[in-house]
Length: 81
Image 1 (tube, one colour):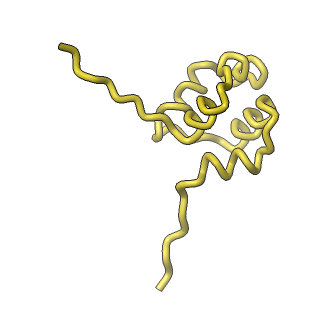
Image 2 (tube, rainbow, N blue to C red):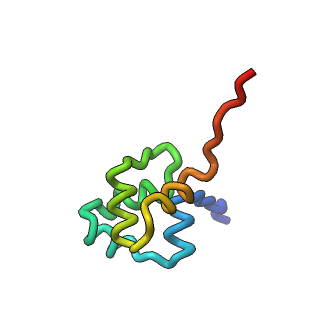
């Protein structure tokens, strides 16, 4: 028996999958490599740069601010006492 592989997607990866976005087309339109898009979609330790987010938003006809809100929806400010 093979162990089950668990693939955890980042918020960007989930967003692209939910919208059925073709990453190869995004790569072609943005100049971001397919391997970089795969890292951004599936590896939480890979940091998405602002310029990459902006280009991806343009390539998929989304508002960059809306995409930023979706990608960063889990971020919260720490409580100050």
